[in-house]
Image: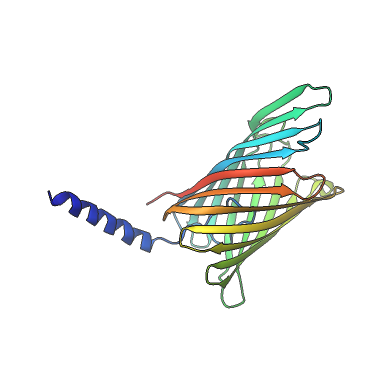
Length: 259
């Protein structure tokens, strides 16, 4: 009768030791600001979820968009580099003034990329990483796909401010086959972890496509570290300009697969 409690005690001790040996789980979701850290070498991390956004929901030309399985796969190739693969499954609903409704459903183009750890945080010098990625032509639904390669790069910075407090920010640029269709992006996020499991973040971000107005948005959310390698997340936000979504919500999880 004493073997069962002993077995669970040994299992709990082994799990605790493994967790202590594991690096902290750092994810690139649910906020828009990419982290400045890479996945540990030879580890696979899955980050996925569902997102819903509404555009002009108070007038006749309402529009809703849902992203199912907003999935990013991250694989640590070296201590300073990871490989990235991502895509979304999109459902788009349009309502026109005449009352008719049109729906689109399909996958977004497949994105491939790499993240490089450039600088380790030391004093006032932040963690710095570079993310470079490509969107493969003609790999998604015809409505969402393009026949041109889209190339983007993002510089990611992260500061540890105080105990439990952190600040991150990104600056990026996407080249979509022509300079008049290119996009400048930025984001700034502040985060506070009041326990080892719970983190709250508040974020502002935006984008400027050539010849179009700025698209400014803000969001906030929570993450909960259920296990040392498994995290749940929820976020919600709103657009701040006329071309932005009225509101959006998101939920999902991140899992770093054990060895």
